[in-house]
Amino acid sequence: MPEYPTPTHVLTKDAVRWSIDTLGALRLHPTFVMYLYLRTQQRAGTLATASAKSEELLALITMPGHPTKPYYFPLIDRGKRTGKPLSTFWRAENISGSWSPGSIRRLQGGGWLGADESAYAWPDNHVDLALKQMLYGKPVSALAIGAYFLRNDGFVLADRLAAEDVIAGFRAKFDYPDDTEGEFSKLFVIDSPEVPFDWFEPAQPTKRLLGELADV
Image 1 (cartoon, rainbow, N blue to C red):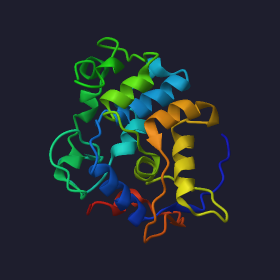
Image 2 (image 1 turned 180 degrees about the vertical axis):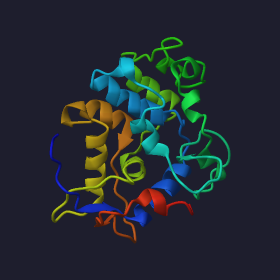
Image 3 (image 1 turned 120 degrees about the vertical axis):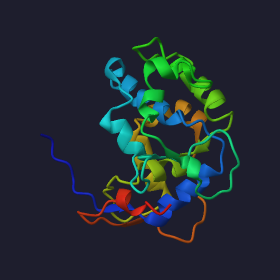
Image 4 (image 1 turned 135 degrees about the horizontal axis):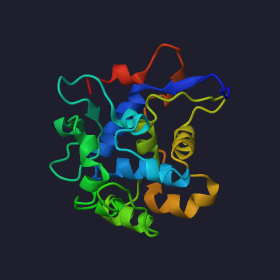
């Protein structure tokens, strides 16, 4: 088995809370989560075996704290936005069923991800479709997306502890290397706002943010 360096830092709770508030104020199609997952599978050559029940996907959205809804992600495309956590961020256990090939192809927005009842599709113009139908024509903050979906990941950092490290971590996790810059810049902006908190804190082996955010 390959050896991985020991993480030195994790995102702070304040950073993750900021990401929830930031994303929750935007209009974003919830299936964008599935788009990011399927894109990594396609680039790895494993789209044919991609599953809406994969541990890799469900780890992105699992959050303890709700008695009946195990998933939580601040991407909604309808309803009132307050810039604060909403009850609609919690998702029921059947969310993976909604993202199966047969179900996803019947969705309004994102239906192009389903080829048929048992296979996902990956059209050549997926970037333009994602921008139009999932981000509603406006690129989303890579910092906010990264701070949320990397909330349980460890970082290996030396003297730089900045927002740029969150974005770099997001690009690494979701396979956006330098040669995908044209694709990346269509879907994401890399603005780094001034914030009154630290993005990172020292990693502790037994500490996971997943278990700390049940009060969001």
